[in-house]
Amino acid sequence: MTDYQHILYSTQDMVCTVTLNRPERRNAISRLMLEELADALKRADRDPGIRCIVLTGAGKGFCAGLDLKASMTKGGASEWGDGLTSYTSDTRELPTSILFELDTPILAALNGAVAGYGFDLALGCDMRVGSDSTRLLPVFAKRGAIPESGGTWYLPRLVGWSRATEIAFLGRELSAEESLRLGLLSLVVPDGELMTTVQAMAAEIAANAPLAVRAIKRLFRHGLTEDFASHTHHMVMQSERLMQTRDFHEGIVAFVEGRPPNFEGR
Image (tube, rainbow, N blue to C red; front, side, top):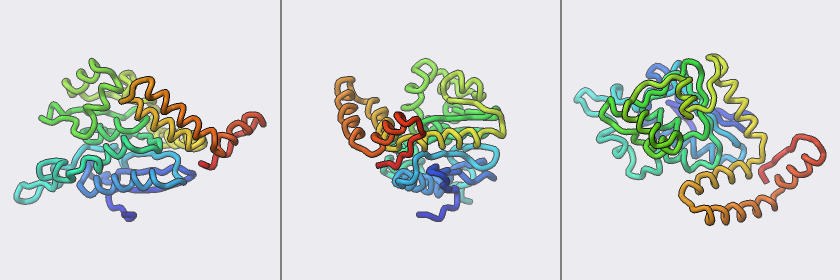
């Protein structure tokens, strides 16, 4: 799948930008968008020329959640059937599951409202940057729902148990500044500077040694379920592999010569 209808996919200078593109619906997620987003994330991760991914939304909002209203048929049925389980029996094919398995770093540029499934998508990114008008809306409990796509796993790990229960049980709208204070956002910038800031961060990541960056991300992920001794063993094995690469040699030589390194991913 390369021709997308509900997302935009662009690449420049080793950075891939994936944009949710239904601005007329505040980027509410249709079944087609879900399929396209899953495909785009896997496509970018497989591309050796991509060293960082940026995920954002077109228009005034990042994502309003699953599009339940527009998908209702005249008979009252929904394209979602009984929910996400009607979309796929393999939860590993959901975009939020794919986000967790990506070795490529991914930054979220959160413009406007971030609600429902969009909230879980944001939590699955490595870093989240917002602007003054960014609003996080973890309103699941107010709708009789749960964060069905990874939010219950990510939230306590990002902010701690007590904060996670406060956010989820109350279901209150969170401003950009409060989201920053809670640790849900890495940075808040003025409106109008969001994409330039995130693209600059992505370019800085892309300039680093890609094999090392991907290895660091894998080790972070594996460390969530490993004891310290096992993790240290895997870290040493990974270090030995990296020390045999051209990029490692280039990093040392560039440091000695006092110049920026030119990493090739080899």
